[in-house]
Image (cartoon, rainbow, N blue to C red; front, side, top):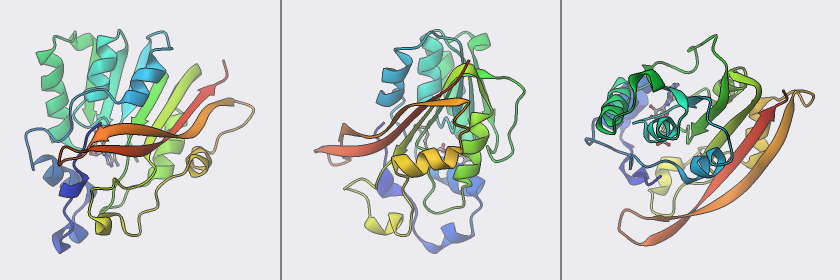
Length: 224
Ligand SMILES: C[S@@+](CC[C@H](N)C(=O)[O-])C[C@H]1O[C@@H](n2cnc3c(N)ncnc32)[C@H](O)[C@@H]1O
C-alpha cells in the first residue's frame, strides 16, 4: 500500500503524545492517508484460501478489511484510531458491503479481546515510529485469535522507504523474518510455518518515481 512516511511528525510535541493522540493527529492530516486498495501480500495469500471469518489487526482506513468482505469473508477490523475506523465504515457503505459482513472496532490491540476465533488473522504494517507500541505482545495475542486450521498473516516493513526522512526511523527496530517469528512465540507442535521471508514490492514514491520496498512476510497455520 502506498503510504506517506515522509509526513510523520518528528517535532517535539509527538514525544508527549499518547498513541491514540498520535494516530488521531496522523489521520487528521488528510481525508484519507492510505490508498484504500488491498495490500498485495494479503490479496495473494487470501486468493489461496476459502473465505470464512477474518480479523484485521490495525486495519487503518479499512482497505484490507473491505476487500476481504468483498471476497466473501465475514470480517472484523480493529484499529486504535476512531477516525480511521469511521473512514473504513464509510468506505464499506460506498461499495455496498452488507453490514453483517464487516464489523469495525476502535480499540487498543494491547487490551482488545474476543471469544471469536478466525480462519484468517491478518496484520499489515503494524508499526509506530514515534509512540510506544507493544508489537510483540500484540502479535503473540494475535495467535490466540486463530481458529484450528486457520492462518495468521503478518506483513511488515523490513526497512524505511528510500524517500522517507531517515531521522523518522532512527532507532527503530525493523523486524526481520526471524524476529517476527520469534515475536509470535509459536508452539511448534501447534503451528506450521508456511512463509517467513523478505518479499520485494514495486511501488511509486510520493514524487512519482518507481521504488522497491522490502516486506517481511510471515504466514503460519494453526494445526487443525
Ligand atoms: C501503518 S498503519 C497500517 C494500516 C493498515 N493495516 C494498512 O495496511 O493500511 C498502522 C495502524 O496501526 C494502528 N495502531 C497502532 N497502534 C495500535 C494499537 N495499539 N492498537 C490498535 N491499532 C493500532 C494505527 O492506528 C494505524 O492505523
